[in-house]
Image 1 (cartoon, rainbow, N blue to C red):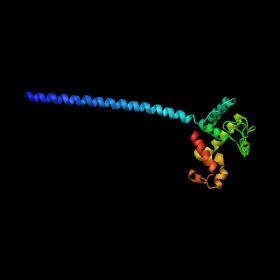
Image 2: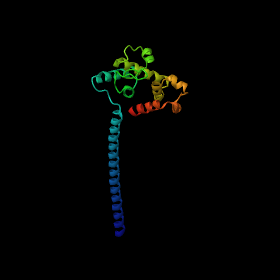
Image 3: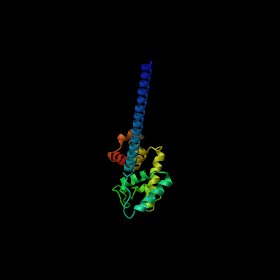
Length: 191
């Protein structure tokens, strides 16, 4: 009987040891999981910072005016500020006085027909150009049911050119000229 009680006591001690080791293992894995989650959160925050800093902001004497005009137009038309910045960065590199060989003018490179359509009196005015350019991309977003790539393709290549090439969805983008494909890639990398 004594040996039976001794064996039962030994078994209980082994069971308790197993429970203690299991508890230590659970604590270790919980701590590891918490550390992994903390590290993941740090990495995600760091990557968010990198992604959002891809679009270079305006610098120099016009920086504050450009930033304010972007914020105002974003609020007014419900277009993401990062999208507006990406378009400006790609179109003009934040130079309000640039004119393209095709005749596009200002920060958002408004074509003469768009300058007229949106009632822009001075396409080199930071505020007017950003307001009209933001309205313009917003109109395309509405036209293409918020399909950003279709809206951007229309902004760059023109809806008439898209229609004449039979581009009615992103599955038709192989028909786009290389310049517009590159434009889409640049914008998408910035936003």
